[in-house]
Image (cartoon, rainbow, N blue to C red; front, side, top):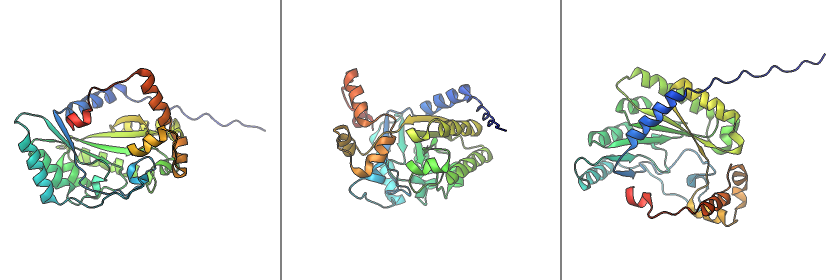
Length: 273
């Protein structure tokens, strides 16, 4: 006798009121007159195919910034801006900040100078998570691209979704334990064809459970040098699978911008960062 499979239970709707509050709070904390990106670690434990660390043709410089050197940089930044000007330092660009053995001390130093502080991590490793939570950065951004391990490993190569989710639960537990820390957690979910809608909805549900901001974004392709070639139709064989997995190909993005007639009087990164 044929028996149909039961329909899966519908996922509970995300709490939009909580998400809106978290989004507004993150925007408030990140608001500044000038921003700095400082890579305190010049390497990453993953090799994501859409990230320069994972696909750049030239090897990237590696190393861990000396704490005394970082202190001089922060002191110089503070001295170059007038009192009362709001500054913000993001401790990342392409490197994995959690690999720095003195990350908590770095966060404390930035905060002691009255400067906002943010961290981005792939969340596969976070050795000093407790100490960093106690140091209370303004936000921690978790960058990921899937809920299930098989999906996640496709676009976060060398990573483990099991490790990411375990660390997300650990982060929630530590934030609750150390109530003096008001760190906001933002989950940057990179959307590909391969991780939507199933993984997307499950990760959204997890963020709702943990009280983290779910912040999805359409995945793009970097570095800029390769993106330009991609737009011109030059796609390296090694990048073909990633290109076919993009929701919106880089060439189409360029066409949309041209059709919209978008123009920039100046580059915000040159002016404010």
